[in-house]
Image 1 (cartoon, rainbow, N blue to C red):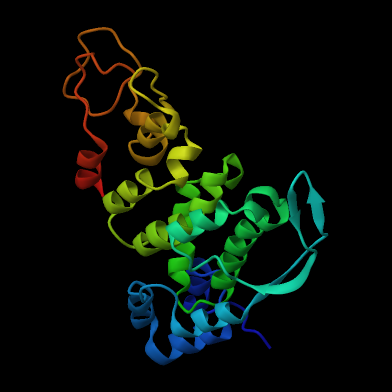
Image 2: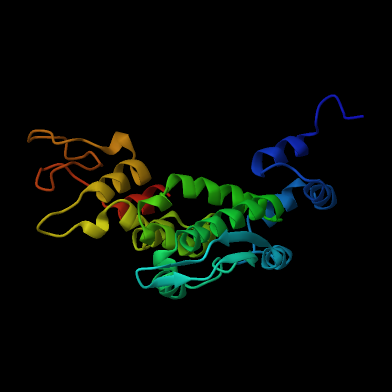
Length: 255
């Protein structure tokens, strides 16, 4: 029979994991809550050994008919395929995307994002380092990228998740911010890839300042002259007299 009220450790586990499992409860009982938290805050680089092995054995069905029109063709496919994209380098992913099969076959291109989603769900369910998975989900939500925006957004998400967000889930905010700004996915998602000096696109700059770092309270619009020069924030006009701090300065001060 279940106790009338759960013990504090079980309540805490449910708040910092994707749902406490028997293995998590056993670990907390063996090591104590403080030691368990310390272990969670110091995860290995990449997936733990058991999780990496489990991911390597997983398959997802893929099925589509043969096609041959306008000089483009491919055979029918009906197989259970391993997760082949999650460990590819950015260069390898880009080369793969530009093959005729990936450029012309929607089933194969969609497969990339299906594998990324599947790996995320598997990590959420099986990783021993649940707190990292929770925080990775938090940061992926905060620095959201819509895969459907473009092929660059979608294919770049593997590197975005694996090499930028996940390693920095407990790390330095500035480093993660700079990694995201120099990624392929975010600049394409928020149109910075289309920004040139003659015709600047302010979409990414606005979201970087207002949504990702300083917040709405740091936005001063485009006020008349004589604004409070001691204020810290950002405006629409690079030429007005208001004092502004760069994102790097802000992140060093507040993170």
